[in-house]
Image 1 (cartoon, rainbow, N blue to C red):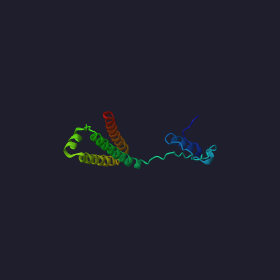
Image 2 (image 1 turned 90 degrees about the horizontal axis):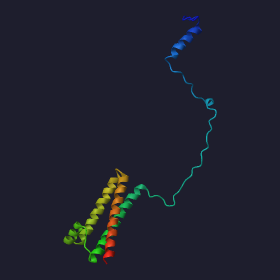
Image 3 (image 1 turned 45 degrees about the vertical axis):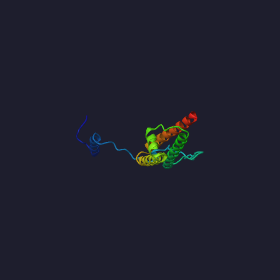
Image 4 (image 1 turned 90 degrees about the vertical axis):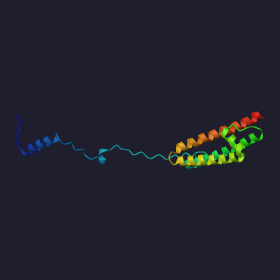
Length: 160
């Protein structure tokens, strides 16, 4: 027969514990060293350092080199244009043709200096916000000017 009245102190403690058990979370024992007897520490492997045969150019140095390449390619465009004009060819760019007709070859040189300065400053400024976009931009500019130089040289060779 079950009785709800506590018959002893132990019975009251059991009943109080049972009442608390329904509302209280079970206590979790803190982990001890004895609770994890099979933990094995792995010895650290020696670190392998792989060195490149050619050192990578630091990201901060690549952009100025690409801007310098842009300047060299534009100088090649000037030189190939000068050689083509000296051999009797005409300028295919209408803006440059007008500048050459009105102001001479010095205007073309000044124009190229302004373009190099504007693109260089623009790309370096852009790199402060998005370095990757700046790299893509200068690569596209370099490829376009390289295409112009190759086109000038091919027209000179074919036109001879």
